[in-house]
Image 1 (cartoon, rainbow, N blue to C red):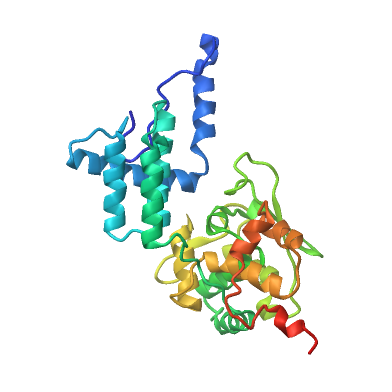
Image 2: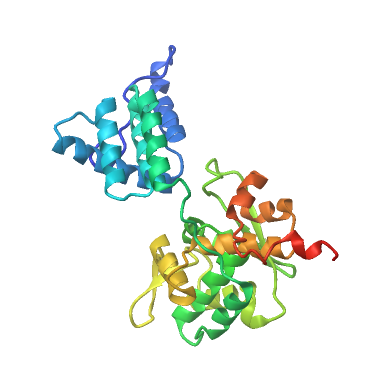
Length: 322
């Protein structure tokens, strides 16, 4: 049984006659395979904690949970104004908890599917997506940053690298100096792990020089690394109030705050990635080129990420030849 801050661990042994001296390792590998990405585990753990607290309050079992408990919990989430995506994630977290514990999940019940369909119809299924910014506004923002102080150097490098590399904020947080390979052609960033690369297979992103040094992601990053004055460890670290450097890895929360500080409250760290896709598509890049940087697996995901809401921005009516 897990604590309230964790997902439960597997309690059942793998099927078959596994030799006794291998049981512990087998158990660990299966648990690792089921858990998924670190960010997902953290989100699910919070959702699971919320569900167990709700079950305790209503004197119902959380593991294994009844269909009635799950339906009541999700209904309350909907009634209190939670987004559909949030409700769906809570259901997934509860399913994962039951899977890890080796017990049947109430999420497979047909009643739940009907409930979720009804909730989706009432509160809409479309997620509020992080908006994309225009390239012109991004350039103006970058050039306005005061790079005479460490915070400005760091933030300029973070924004330019995040945009040109189509990075997730978790990838920027995890980035180490050892992952960077500079040469005359630019920069290759190696990602040991990412949301879609959980097995540690080599995954790379290419960053290129800009003719305008004030907008160049590579020169900006090199200026920040000179400020750090070391050759290993986290690339982006937090600063004390007096702009003094620390060795603490900057968290994804602050990446989000930095984006909003410079670009506006309507944007999030995810806007860097969404804007890369949108600007690339507006400039005529095909999906395969975009996917080579974002590491998406399908063109359908590229279409989902593209923010082309302006009816005049991306419209074949301009090309009719009249």
